Every structure is written in C-alpha cells, then in structure tokens.
Length: 193
Image (cartoon, rainbow, N blue to C red; front, side, top):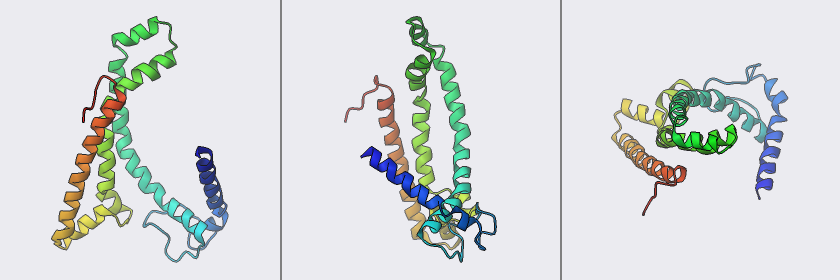
C-alpha cells in the first residue's frame, strides 16, 4: 500500500511537471512562474495538469512566509532544550556505555528535547488553520483571516462570532493534542482517560 501511494504521488508530480515548459512560455505567465497574488492566474487557458502547476506556483510565496515565521522560534526552542539536555546525567551514562554519538543524540537527547516543541507546534498549526490574517491580505488569498477582516469592516456580526468560536475550539483541540504528544514523547507521562 505504501509503495502504491508513493508511486502514485510521484507519477502525479511527474505529469504536472511535464507541463512546465508550456506553462512558463504562456503569454499570461510572461516568464514569471512564481506568482505573488491570488490563488490562480486569471485568464490562463490551461488543462487540468497546467492548472495544478499554476496553483502550486501560487502557493510557494505564502507557504515560505508562513513557515519562516515559525521556523526561527522552533530552532531557538530546540537549541535551548538540546543545550540543557546534553548536560544531563543520563547523556553521560549513555556515552559511558559506549553508545555512538549519533545514538546518544537521536535516541536520548533529541527525544527529551522535543518537549518544548510539543507544546508550541500544535498551537501554531491550529493558528495557521484559524487564519493567517496578514499573509492572506498580502497575497490576496480568500481564507478565514480575510473573511474575518472583511466581516469586521462591514460590521457583520455572525461571521465574526463564528470565527471566534471556531478558533477557540481549535485552540482547545490544540492543547489536547499537545497533552497527548507529551505522553508519546515521554513514556514517564501517562494519559489516563
């Protein structure tokens, strides 16, 4: 099943990328394949495969913007946690047992250093689903954040209330997922339901 899934994804990507030359040379693209606004190129006369490529190129810049916001925070937290964990007694014990440095870092240190990320990543992920207001406004994407801003400007109460209730529910789910991740990462923590 896994081989079939990986193969089908690769075949789909291969077929989409076969239209790159035609996409790049079309008059609507005009030699600029990475788009800055919207979710698709207006007026692009394209078949299914080229439209998939067009949507993918429109996703590049917003995705980079959203990833870079969180990436620096994650690296800082993980670096601080790794520096703290590397001075623990069980790391010295693992080295004294003769384990390779790779095994010491990956199995012992990294697993225990993931605890701070387990509390941040679910909340950040749900925040992205709840709406990246600034990113959607800059890149002209129609998403939940843009709906929230437009509803606030037009003084529409119902979409604003729904947005707040949905993001509140997602925040509760994110905290629950973070608690379950603690139990997965650290076997000393038990989740009794």
